[in-house]
Image (cartoon, rainbow, N blue to C red; front, side, top):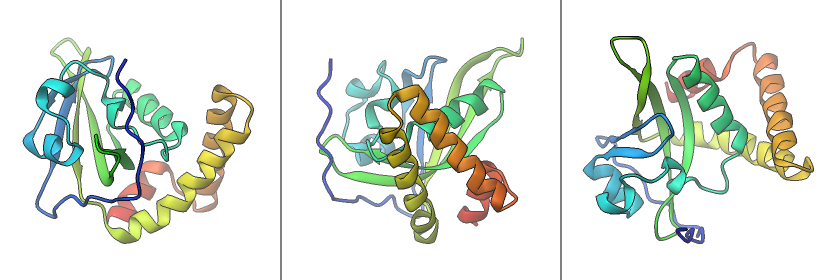
Length: 175
């Protein structure tokens, strides 16, 4: 088992013209990573291919956001959202992610494509306290599944009060 890096308070910013591109199989194992992805996360192609995409999951990210992502993908829909990722050296970077199911000619999902770009700072300032509250809820729920359910309920209530859903919320923040 690979040792997880210790997060440190050092942000790396994705360039305005840069795009991170990756592809996974249906289980989330990385099957392709572009040069920008390898450079920003600090892992080589050899270290990335065949491992779960959550190798870059930052512990500041609520599990409920990833549950939302996977639930959306299972419906064969694309997902838009903001994600804080963890680099090999413990640094972090924020992205605006678009994840799309790769569907074959028979209508079967055979993998997922993800394209990530630099998020607006204003969007991060909006989502970061929401994610922090979701994470607090998850940690205080008394169990992983209960935490995810409660954090999802918090997010749904917040979005309902804004008369929106997560996709519209994310796209509006991205601009």
